[in-house]
Image 1: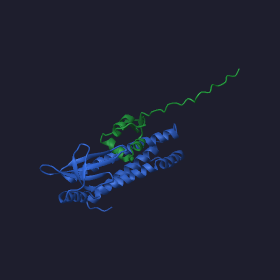
Image 2: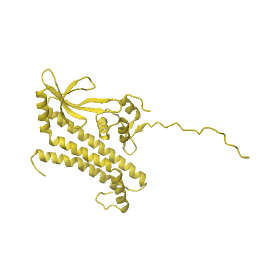
Image 3: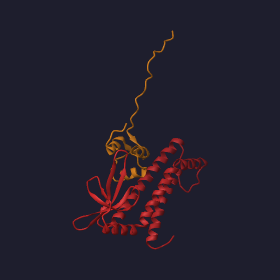
Image 4: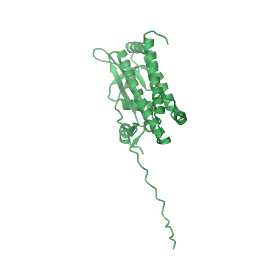
Length: 72
Length: 186
């Protein structure tokens, strides 16, 4: 016997919040050129971590700290 | 793999493709190397202009985030300028960055001191470090990109050629500055 599918609202997965962003993405979020982001990193205004192959990643918490505002 | 070995057709194809993919990064990198080169070449003139401006009349006031008030002298780029302030005994100079973020503006003294020429030299040294940081990041991005597009293929030669291009962009401007400061035309 076939089961009739219930008329449920499609389940929408909650958007996954990224933990870290590339320099280019961080620049877009801050609204500056990525050279400025490298400068912020160089003088310790933005702390970073590195991906497996050495790519710089900027943690979301660091961006929020710098923006002093909630990103949505 | 030795860089001087002849690349395979696949490596040549990967190099062309990566060059296209990272063209914007490479162009921006060269532009910024050139801008730094410009500051380094005109360092003495800029330092004199800043000194003259500081002695002449009070300029536009810029207050940095720590509350210090500076007077604008000379622009170095769209976001950096040389400023000065009077201290008890002397003049203090600083390279100030005014960086407009989406939510607020960061105003900060990047390098400061009583000798404007030394302040500028410290600034250009720091900017070279930034360019090296940028170079290392692009190298890692190229590596990641190639490993995703050409899994299990040796693309070391392509990554190396990117690194050489960027290192050359940094060192060529440095060599030009050194030659010009010795009065040698190249």
